[in-house]
Image 1: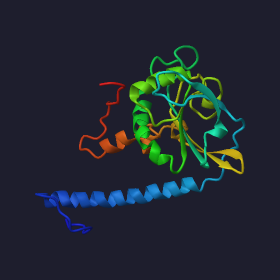
Image 2 (image 1 turned 30 degrees about the horizontal axis):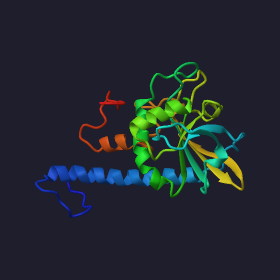
Image 3 (image 1 turned 60 degrees about the horizontal axis):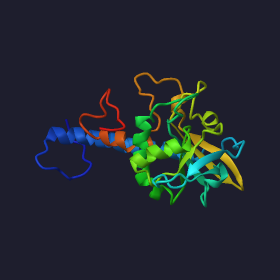
Length: 238
């Protein structure tokens, strides 16, 4: 088989067999990057979604790591700050009892937020970022303190219908992970995007994941010979 010539760099003791297979993979990776760019451009070209029908009021504790609670109401329109775009992650952490109750938060969501906590100062240069959960703010805050989430703006939607309206929960009140994007135009707020693959019919042979693009864990493990593993999932503690 002839070797595909892409670059002249070689690593110590690599074989011709490895280089041939790696070059074929390199072409596939280049095609994947182009496809990712095409999808991103298509996403950016979406027309405006529906105008947000109410200025949702959330509860927020401005300092999740402080020793005392200082909760206050905050409106959706106030979350943008000086930005025109708002990224809102729906964190699967329902109340301790009642509709959508959860004894503990979702480990997968927690893994995502562990990563976003560190990236938030960078994200905030381009867009506003918030995390919304159905649990009361004191419960969210208690968990966030244990994780050291000093960089995330955490909100409770316990007193409004945001989760149901923007697919952070299903019809039975079970919590869902979702990333929604909102944009502000001339004082009006519109929905721009949601990670809707979770709502689409199942794709044979495919895991129904839909927020991997913001999840460093899986992207990193995909680079390893062992991959993600068929059954392994992150945990809240090890």
